[in-house]
Length: 396
Image (tube, rainbow, N blue to C red; front, side, top):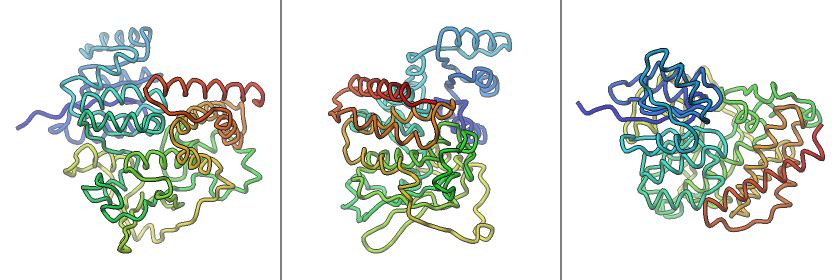
């Protein structure tokens, strides 16, 4: 028998990381955990290390690494602890690693994900912000290194499954008319617009279909998540923004669709459980059991669709405009959104202020070309500074 593939999970303590480890644990003959990373949940990272016994674990700082190291030594676990950005890069690019789950949320995930790409790994991309921030640079690195890039967002994974294997020749060349990106509409799909100023972080994080982290849950509630996914889809599938249409589908059973010029529309369906796209990408081009229950169409009984309301969800409109502007605009959008969501979760601004802040930051920061990773992070920092200035004027 061949040896199990070695897998690194970046962002192991988050919902995607935990789902990935669940799928891996179901197939010990095929997969073995090589490296795990975590940020603030050190006790949970320790527990994962004791359960999966990776060769390496990466902690965010020297202090965190010392704490994790002490816990591992006390339990007799030989996992070696690394620290900081260098530690993340090491477990993402180590020669032994076959595949990397890139599931660190936000801009913090860009550098380690790029390290995996540049090392030519099979990269399971759950960190959409990496592509949003540095799209052209990121995709150039994929092509240059020969890395295999597989999307984990349920929508992009669905699109990937519905496209022909030679889609890289161009969507027009393979007969694709448009991509239909589905959205649940989140918890506020039917909330009266005048009541949105009063919604709480707890309400925004209570997604009706998916179990996600707080930041992604708020993004889903504002539909910024769909805006970021639109930008990501453009880069993954070399599609113009006009070729990507968002469709609100409350049941979250159809994960996305591809419309062909002959009138065929292919869709990927499944229960709303991230283990399905994770298992698909982990085993691609094969299939493995994910642990997800079979889809019961009789229990679902109906599938609904509607156009997104951009008055209710201005973040979607703002994100599409950033996608059309290109260059540095998506990086500015992402940075301002991260600051705005943090402020909303901290109770400093109201829910509608998220879109207001982002739009005003985009208005202030000029759109420029991004020729290097340093340029990407410079734009990111400028946008965050503008967002903080907005907060200083408007926060409650």
